[in-house]
Length: 144
Image 1 (cartoon, one colour):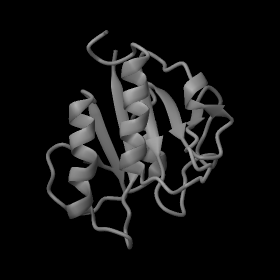
Image 2 (cartoon, rainbow, N blue to C red):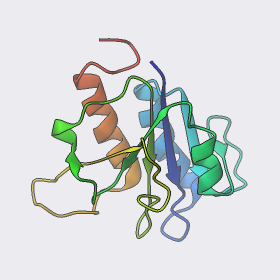
Image 3 (cartoon, rainbow, N blue to C red):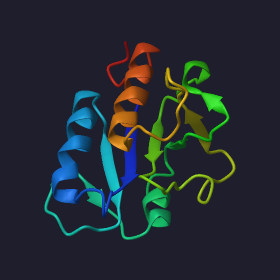
Image 4 (tube, rainbow, N blue to C red):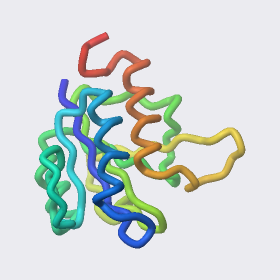
């Protein structure tokens, strides 16, 4: 199984140099094979591959099933069956690549919060929630 994650830097709310570790450590802990971000920030981080355009980031990862994580997706995480080989794509505050870049065959998932609010979870936090769900459902990289 292969797992990738992608996102959009929070330019304005944060800075890639400080945001990078917020993505890197959950990705490492859940054995993510590839981590990609957009746009190119200019930081040096050997763990991330940056793309100037979201379209290029997605195209480079189409060997995996693209799964958009978005608060407006129809499928709730509890009902979601994770593909064996998946690339999870996240947006950022006030911007989402879904549905602008979704193609036929791509998937989309959301998770509901206890309070019922939407869009108040940072993408790197959503990453940890989604990858934990993947692990619990037995789709993690270690095959458990």
